Image 1 (cartoon, protein in one colour):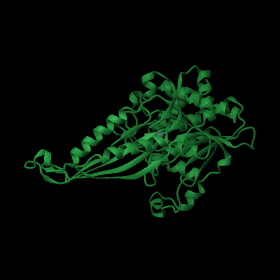
Image 2: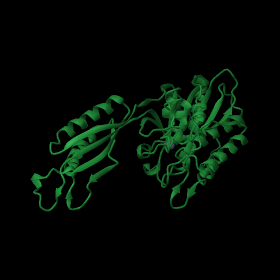
Image 3: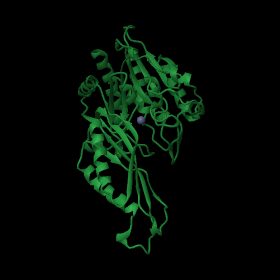
Image 4: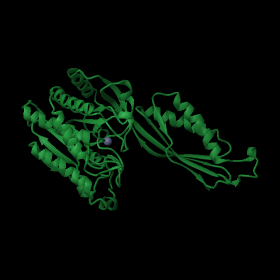
Amino acid sequence: MIVSGERFLADLEALGRIGWVEGEGMRRPAYSPSYDEARSFVEAKMKEAGLAVRVDGVGNLFGRLEGSDPSLPAIMSGSHLDAVPGGGKYDGPLGVMAALETARSVAERGIPLRHPFEVVGFTAEEGGEMGGTFGSRALAGLLEEPLPEEKLAAIGLTPEMVRSSRANPSKIACYLELHIEQGPFLERRGISIGIPTGIVGISRYSVRLAGEANHAGTTPMKERRDAMREAAELLSEWFAWTDSRDDLVCNVGVFSLRPGAAAIVPDRAEFTLEIRSLKDSVMDEAAGVFRAFLGKRTRAAVSMEPLVWKGAVDLSPMLQDAAEKACGEMGASCVRMPSGASHDANPMARITPTGMLFVPSMGGISHAKGEKTAPDDLVRGAEALARTVLEADRRL
Ligand SMILES: [Zn+2]
């Protein structure tokens, strides 16, 4: 073992008590007092480990260990320190604390590293005023100008602070992130480590069906232009189609009816349609299929407006190989798989070779207080990360 499992777990649990509300889960949004406390906790641990610490303009935290060749760019590893309301302890902090454990184990044991190694705790990955992966998008220079001054002021930032957080990609050799899987794939198969090959893209649409409101008691069934029924038939046809595909997932998470009364046939149904896939072309194909199904609803006027389109991201094959080798050295089972959730690795992949590692989520639960990963799996993840960093240091 390279890392100290006991120390790593103790620190991860201690960090998990900051912002934890019994019965409710985590309350640690970015730019809040509990968030600041969590960042200070990690900062102190970084200093204890002898890392050079800095915080950038938006609040991303860095701890740097120098390598033997100062001319080389840094291997960066971490994740985020903020949490969704009522979330768990490991979504984000696991990756930060495992990177920190890697840095201090490497330093303590005098393991030679050629590249500098930088631990990063990103801010505001889970969204808020500025949308998800805010900290890593600021670092990657992906935030669009003009920056919204009022929104930034609400979280104590200025456009200048955001611009100053942009990193020079030539100073970064690669980015590695350990994260909980947030799904049931690994647990169901009894596999210890997942190696994502890419992060799925997300497309969202706002869909509307407009019928005719009428008396729910006196209007004969066949004469109704019922927006709800049209939507129900449309969605059942759609989900039958999505079930036949293993290269995409789809969700209707928001649905509303108007006028919204028990005795009135609804004249309007509105919902969001979300499609995720590792292939941009599949997302577009699926949207086309949905549009065709929608076109068949002759008893309603229909519309479908795009809301979000974020392309899929490929992760570095070299880092996937490095991770697989690391798992082999440890005798840990591993499998390549897609990442269905977005992560800080997503913006990072746009500026540097990026890799990820997943550990199993018990029951596939996340973004909820019941989120849990077995201690052995947490430690195995940290060890796999450390070994992947060392392997990347040799290969880069
Ligand atoms: Zn996360």
